Amino acid sequence: MISRENPARFAEIVGTVPETLPDAVDAIVRRLDGEQRAWAARPLTGRLAALTWAAGAIESAGPELAVLLARESGKVVGDCRGEIGFAVRFLRWVVEHAPSAYADAEVDDALGRLVTMRKPYGVVAAITPWNAPVILAMLKIGPALAAGNAVVVKPSPLAPLTVTRVVELFGAPIGVVHGGPETGAALVGHDLVRKVAFTGGAAGGRAVAALAGDRLTPSVLELGGNDPAILLDDAPFGDAAMERLVMASFATSGQVCMAAKRLYVPRARLADFVDAYRAAAGRVLTTGDPLAESATTGPVISAAAQRAANALRTGDLHDLGCFDADPDTGYFVRPALVVDPAPSSPLVADEQFAPVVPVLPYDDEESVLAAANAGELGLGASVWSADEERAFAFARRFEAGFTFVNTHNRTGMSLRAPFGGVKRSGWGREYAHEGLAEYAQTCVIHAPAAFRPGTEPSAAGPSAYPLG
Ligand code: NAD
Image (tube, rainbow, N blue to C red):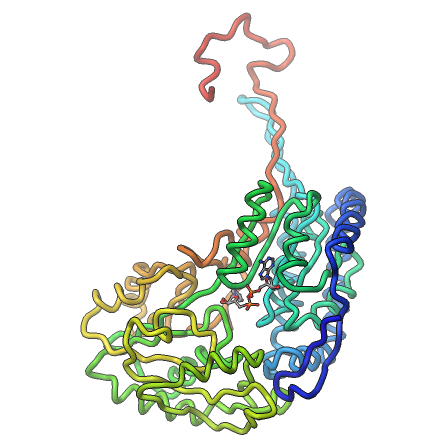
């Protein structure tokens, strides 16, 4: 059994799930492989009707799911409502856009007759982390089911409960397995798994990609980031902008893949920035019980995460916001800004995934861009300026999969924007048409005009086989 405690009150057990041992993983994959054929044989409209029904069921259960998510993950309940609502919106967006993404296309013209089909893979393995467990599972479940696949979800053992409830609300071929790397490996390595979608950290991603690669199973990887936020010399330090920037770093106690994890500020404006940022944190940042509506951020996920975060609290440290929490009974860490740490320190060089953020002064745009682009990760980035044209020109030079202008958060962003990292932050995309395309394979049927009955040439010369 896997039991999950409430990170805000670790004496409280929120729930338990049975661990899925490798034999049980095999049985679930085989069952879903059988169900997948009937699901794929349904017309697309029938599959989408089932997904529309599931979206309604998740929406109806939303308030209860949000509280469960807050209790198991430590995310504040308002953010949990937002996550469930976003998952429902995304599922409905899939239903709206699946017909154009997955429909067959046929042309019959002077070149011949060509049918392009989008076929499901079969069983898709969806391996997800704990920090946004519902939306990160839904980004895989929605498109995979719409395209005609079956799905096996393996949530993180640190937040297995809400995802399990959500999966139960689908009338579709979907199942859940529980456990850590061993269960994940049994799933990824299974003969009948034909596509793997993983979101998580580099170590897990490397293991999953190696196993999938060994089996020649295609995979999508969404990995970690160490996002820079660069404030140009004309960036306004107004209240609203500073409040956005504070929450971009400290929502979910900094445990967000695309949190603003390194702040770069012109050296001449550093002192003004620190004052404005601390004042903004004082207005918007309250660390407390995730179920209290007044809290805007909660604990970190585990005792290990609490120890790691506290180890980063060194140097020119400025505590931030209101701290209304007990770090001895919950995994709470006081949010902090660290001014001008060494660029080689772990707080700057690595993804901290914690409520401790460095601010680094810079002297010129070329050197700050080089610093921002240094390192192996390239998930998100942001540039802040009073001049949108200047910001967009600067943004083009980031090595990042997604760059924000004057914000650093998906809030308010259209679902048409694809998301995913470059460099060692992953491959493949989620959201948007690119995300839908990951779950269908393109197959064609072609009758070239030259070879249609009654039109065959008498012989074909060597140049008739240009592709070898
Ligand atoms: P993690 O890699 O520890 O775990 C992710 C999932 O993979 C879990 O279900 C875990 O049990 C499983 N897993 C781990 N090792 C495995 C293995 N060897 N074989 C099979 N499965 C394995 O990540 P985490 O701590 O849960 O999440 C935090 C990380 O995820 C951060 O680096 C964060 O930036 C990243 N993340 C990325 C995105 C994105 O969209 N790019 C979104 C959220 C989180």
